[in-house]
Image 1 (cartoon, rainbow, N blue to C red):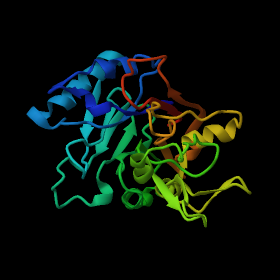
Image 2: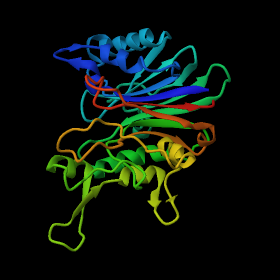
Image 3: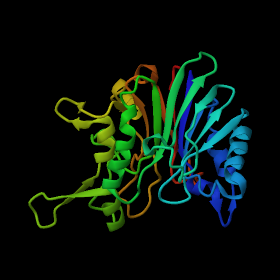
Length: 302
């Protein structure tokens, strides 16, 4: 059994021109199990000064969890704030990582930020990817989702996740009040729908997530089509329909309420290995928060 963690670490701990990894230590201090794989977003400036930020994050995780962690830095097309994967070398071995040079012409776009690993105890191999979708455009998020859809039906078990900057269709997920959201949130994360009135109606832009996991059908209470992925949050809800799926971001003024935009996904091959009841959004008791996103965990039998 291994634990997978998803965490959007605000600005990667980079504040006022220096790295502060204490919030990272604080976020992981709540965990009882030492995770095998950590999917981390916002590794801001981690390449600078010979990967200073990456090494400091490795050190912080190693100290907080009393286990050895190595980081694999990814790439991001929107600036020096890439995602990264950290793995516990006692538990898993990295077999492949496409490199972290965003200008390398020999790496295809659908192979970036995608790794292959082996569980040390069992020898089982699996894939893992981390993503940070575009924060401003639903159309761009859909194109980013299409880069990852090939792994949904891959025979290799895959787990992936990240700040996907949007939610999926289905009323069982947290719902923003889009009429109360400001113009920024509406135009970046929502979608205007012509409902026959002069004002129209704003709703969540779910196209990217729905492309990966399928569109929710409220009549059959099932997903239609999709690329072969499954949201672990939804698997947990299916096992326990009384479960209230928690949002993954803190409530900020003008956003219409918190939302679930950080997702852990598994493909068809990985789904039987997921311990759905283990899914948890770790919400701190109160400020100061380690990040503006909450840490998410799940266990996989691999």
